[in-house]
Image (cartoon, rainbow over all chains, first blue to last red; front, top):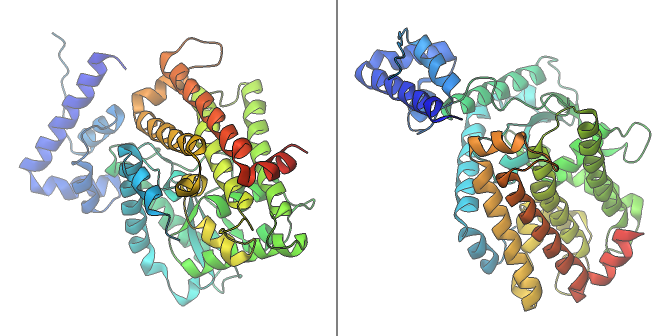
Amino acid sequence: MSNTTRQLRDDVRRLVVDHLSSRPEARTVLADALSVPPSSIDRMVTKDVWELSFALQTADALGMRLHVVRD
Amino acid sequence: MPVASEVQELLDSHPHLSRARTFSEDRIDDFTSQLARYRTDDAEGLDVVAFGSLARREATAESDFDHLVLATRVPDDPDVAQRLLGAADELRKRWAVEEGKEDEANKPGASGVFGCAVGAFDLVHQIGLQEDTNHSLTRRMLLLEESVSLLDETVHRNVIDSTLRRYLELDRRDPTRVPRFLLNDVTRYWHTITVDYQAKARTGVNESGLRYIKLLIPRKILFAGTLMSLMLCGKEGWHLATADHLREQFSITPLERLVQALPTVDTKVHDAMVGIVGIADRYLERSADEEWRETVKKASKTSTCHEFDEMREHASDLQAHLETIFFDWDLIAADSKRMLAF
């Protein structure tokens, strides 16, 4: 995995976690979208590393629009 | 069955084994409590059984959730087994999400061995016969060697008990001797998975350096752990070849079975046992790393890959340690030589 991919993966995760912490209702929205109980979302955010595809899936499920800009 | 305190201390002193045990126990407790609502009269005689690293208490975020519905009777409601499989699949999905993985992660393998309902009769009463397929051999061996009940422990225990009694009844040997029939089937299973690996590698199906390393380290430890339980039967101060005693043996993990005699062995064998625990710990550390797994998957015996080569060296050390334990330790060396070669 390249450093760019790793950084993208971690940045998308951070954005999703920030989104969830600032919008309490998003927890239920995401749980419904992923067909899991809300308690699974609580456990999920404690994981330091997510797969990139999963991070993008959660961002999409939350209706987040991502713009990737390369320096 | 508790293991000796020295064995427990050795295992606890290895951080990756210790962490994986905690992770596995938490996951088993969670799954058991989630499935508790399915313990109804309809589900009587059924169990949801998990296999593999979860049962060995060596699960990590990268582990699969291999499971079966095990039935000791035909349920009145024909849909109940399907409901249990659906519930188990929900648990698999939850596990994936909680580890930050897509839903496809941790799905039972495509071999067809797991993710279905099986009857205990087919596992227990076809041993060695024409209908004893690779699938039934695999399920029976894994049920004995690395399985954990998630719904009804009584069902799980009864099937293990029946399986052991079947082996021992057909064998009709003195319980102070190694149960040869069971030993032969355990060895058959080991040979089956080694041949299966080579056949798939030859055809290019699922060719994977990771599969090779898994064969050489955790699968070999599984085999050796069971061999140890069988070779110790009837030895002074050890268990007998009875269903009750062997069920106790199979209630501890393969690694615990393999090194259970640690407090009683001489320095050379002691060092070999300690070395094996260190290798198991190192394998767990590396295999819990997604990037390491992806790298090793692409490696082969003919390519150059530092990660793969490092683990092959550990596998070579493991082989040497096993040879020390099984062929240099007086207590079991004679039986090992007599029963493992011819």
